[in-house]
Amino acid sequence: MRHLVAATATLACTAVLGGLVALAPAAHAGEFLADGGFESGNLSGWSCDPGTTQVVTGQARSGSHALAGSPGGTGTAQCKQTVGVAPDTAYTFSAQVKGSYVYIGVDGGAGTWTPGTGGAYQQLNVSFTTGPNQTSATVYVHGWYAQPRYYADDLSLTGPGGPTPSPTPTDPTPTPTPTDPAPSSHALVGYLHSSFANGSGYVRMADVPASWDYIDLAFGEPTSTTSGDIRFDRCPVAECPAVESDAEFKAAITAKQAQGKKVLISIGGQNGQVQLTTTAARDAFVSSVSRIIDTWGLDGLDIDFEGHSLSLGAGDTDFRNPTTPVVVNLISALKTLKARYGSAFVLTMAPETFFVQLGYQFYGPGPNGAQDPRAGAYLPVIHALRADLTLLHVQDYNSGPIMGLDNQYHQMGGADFHIAMTDMLLTGFPVAGNTSRVFPPLAPSQVAIGLPAGSNAGNGWTSPAEVNKALDCLTRKVGCGGYTTHGTWPALRGLMAWSVNWDKFGNWEFQRNFDGYFG
Image (cartoon, rainbow, N blue to C red; front, side, top):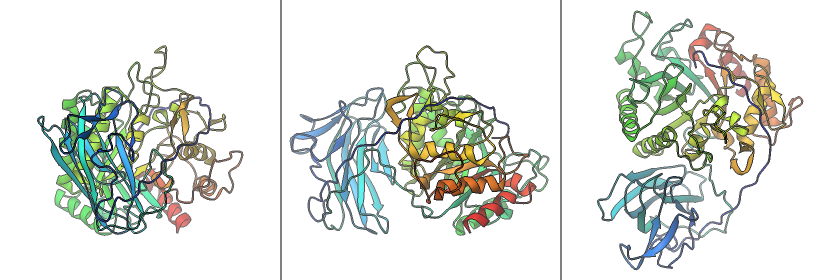
């Protein structure tokens, strides 16, 4: 984020509607899954990836049948079931699984996995508590890319029971709303220069104003581009004379969390190129990031991969089923971290427009290999993690012109750019113009607008008046200028700033405008 390279793009527009899946009824009080042992001999009651999942005999743990999933290299062979549940109620989802890299979990919540079961069945368990207004839950089981066939049997979702609801349509690709903090609240996100100084001045953690809801520590960086070994080094006194001690820093983090704030480690930035080219690098990433989180008592992780961290290989053309190792391994690492820390784990991402909206027309190297392979390379990561994603704040700066859903180019620096770029995320778009491969919209509570805090912070600074104009359009469909949005999103989560330090340098103009707008 410190000094980013501009990108140019052209895009096209098509609107697509998703299909519907009905809720499965509760089997009886105490057990909520229908046909958790697959004894019907088919996948009735389950929504499964076609062509890679089937019910088989000869592999059952009990009874006569079991689920067999064959992920291959382009999918996870997932089966899921949605059931009615009671609000504010504890449930346990369990499954007997056999194979390597088998996952179970709850969409938008907890999950767990096993790296291998040694040829026998192993029980996996996930416990979760429904939200105050929650009336349905979706549980899943799946394998992993390029892993052998897995088996699952005796799946069970147990709880105190509840009424069987009327069938309710749900999106086949659920986009759960994050519950921590409250999704109806608006959030201010800011990066804190914790490991370096760049002319904006050092800001102690304790001195970050209370307006900032998410504080991203910039940056965790790898020991080498492909090692996956991430280190977080605090700014040295020689570079940051006002830096606090480690003990003071950690105490200030704890104090922020006591106020309901979330403090994350941000990985990457301009200088922190991260390429998880191997499973060894993936595992080193998980181990080292976990160590940082545990050492400082952090709430989660922000992915700010830039430069050449992510790109797509030849033949990797479907964002729904990526095959490029750096993408597949990053997805696996993030899912592992989510499973390790549970539903409270905060996951955010801060890609550049080059890696997201540019994917509307260009995706990877293209059919003749002439395109930039980084184009749209974040899309498979966002899509695979959408059920676990707390916030996406695309950097609407340091960008070239991007064509929006109106088939017009939009230039950074004014309300129009933020309206068009955000509309794409909340409406969805066909990737590389392919209407059979549509990137589905995110929930508005998962989306914030990324901006420079001041004119010194990056190209594309937007005045407070223009920021407010963009917010008016997106949340109330007022003052949209020549752009017509495809919806109205009052639950749009908020704003992200690069950075807290640059905002202090600018007399807190960005923060004060946010507070004035959202109250």
